[in-house]
Structures are given as C-alpha cells and as structure tokens.
Image (cartoon, rainbow, N blue to C red; front, side):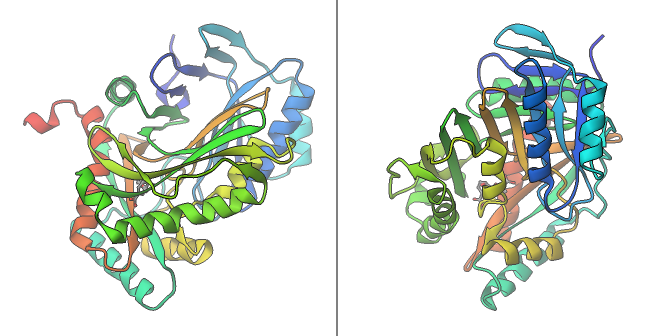
Length: 373
Ligand SMILES: C=C(O[C@@H]1C=C(C(=O)O)C=C[C@H]1O)C(=O)O
C-alpha cells in the first residue's frame, strides 16, 4: 500500500526521482532550528552503520509556529536502488535527551494561522512595503500572499507527476505535505564544491527584464549579499558580472550562478544553508529589518514556504532549494504561496499579476484543464 500523501518524500529534476516513505521525523522550531537540525544529522551520521539519505524542509521564519523537519525515510529509493534505513531506539532516545525541544515522530501541524488577502488587500500590502522603503526602513522586501485550492491527496499525487512532467528543468518536491516545483537552488554540494543560484527579477517577457534598470538593480541587491557571505567561507569561482536570463515555461527570471569550494571541508551543507537563509531573494535587504517587515505585513505564517527544502546524504552531498512555487497540504486542500521582491518604484498592480504568474504552475497541476474553461 502506498503511504499517505502527507508523508511522502519526493525529489526530482528531470530523470529518476529520489523517493522515501515511513521512518523518522525530527521536528524543530525556533531561531536555531537549522543548527539543531545539523547537530541531529551529524549525530546520525557518526552513529549509523550505513550512509543515510534524509530529506529536509525548514520554516522560513525564526518565529514560525510550524515545524521544520528532518526526515529519515525507512524505505529509500535512489539511483534505482531500494534501501532500508533505520534508527536504533537507543540512538533516538539519546538525541531526544540531548535536545529537550526536539520532537520525534509527530506529524507536523499543517495549518498556518491567518487570513487570505484579496487583490485589494495585496495592493495595500505592496503600498505599505513601498512606504517602508520610502522611509529607508529597507531597500528591498519580498512580500506575498496565499491562495487555498480544494484538493484531495489523490489529486496531490497526480499534481506532483504533472509538475515533474511540465517542469523537468526545475526541482519537483514533496516533503511532509509541502509540494511544488521550484526553480531556485540554494545549495548543491558535492564534497568541497558547491553551487547556488540567485533568482530575482521576474517578467513574462525576456526583453522587459534586460532593459529594466530597476529590475537589474533589484537583482544585484539580491546577489551581492550572497556573494559576500559565501566569500567569507569559500573560494569562489569567477562570477559573471551581469545576471543571465532563466527561461521557465511561464516566466523569465534574472539569475546569477555562484560556485566555489569551501575553505573548511568540515563546514556542513546545513551550516552553509543556515549562513545563507533567508536570502535577499525571499526576504529582502537588509535581512533582519526585511524579515520583521514581512512578519508585520503578510497575512499568514509562511510555514515552510520560501524555506530550505531538499536532501542530504552521508557522503556530505546535498541538494537544497528554496521552497517556492509550492503549496502546503491542509485539511481539504492545498494552500499555495507566492511573493515578489518590492523595491522603490514597484507597481502594486503588476506585483499582484506577478504572484498570479508564480501561482500558475501549482494551479494548473491541481486543476488540469482550468485554463480551457
Ligand atoms: C518569492 C518568490 O520568488 C522569488 C522572487 C523573485 C522576484 O522577486 O523577482 C524571483 C524569484 C524568486 O527568488 C516566489 O516564487 O514566491
């Protein structure tokens, strides 16, 4: 029998997916959730007699009421090989004793409290973001909205297949009921080498992007802090000074690719993720005031939307993206999220249409044929 959709683990870019089911769920909340997750992961790596693969999905915000999860599936399928993974109960007990806040095994609570903004309310939210920029509180802030789509778990299963087929060049995922197809890579790590991609600047047409000074400078605002932060712990390959255009089936983005080698190989993938998150592409600049403004302006806890999502293995490899173009399974349906970066001069009406475009892949996958009606 297949596992309930909410527990399914799935990661795919083109080709064969990595999938998992059952097993252990370590749940974390709070400011140091990624560091504590890394401690648990390192403890598992040193104690387990095999090289495990785990899935991660972390909350966007330090204050999120919804948990971040590290999932070690009992049944893992990767590279067409099926593996059984287990955690001895004494080891699980030791991990729990070492971190009194750690929760084990609980199905995460799925419903983020808050209300869903209308088009007019979203417009107001963007205007308030612009007012905060005007007062120099932030230079850029990424604000968004949610939309609820009724759907049953069977529809979600088919949606996952539809996303993987329609978006083979991006990362299709399902981790503990968060499902989507994201184009934004936060960290791919193979040994000492890593890669990341910053996306910021969005349009339906490529021409609009390259010629728009505002969007290009918004992109630099997002890419520069990532370069600085990684430059402190890594030797970076040369980065092209101009962003390139990334074409998705329904949108174009400005993109900067960054690659390098960590100076200290002991710096773990989750430590790098913790260093980068939340990036200016999903939070803003400067980081802390932007996050505070998001908490103030948005209508709902983001939960794991715009948080890191991906997998890690015992060889030190990882592929972790930002959970965008996705939705959270809730009772009776899926709550979709989308946001956009606001800088001075942004047009509130366009910002709403940008969120509509970003919601499109999930809406199409959950309601096939919706555009024909
Ligand atoms: C926040 C989202 O997308 C991010 C914001 C972008 C922008 O502001 O142009 C572009 C890509 C992503 O980094 C989202 O898809 O919800």
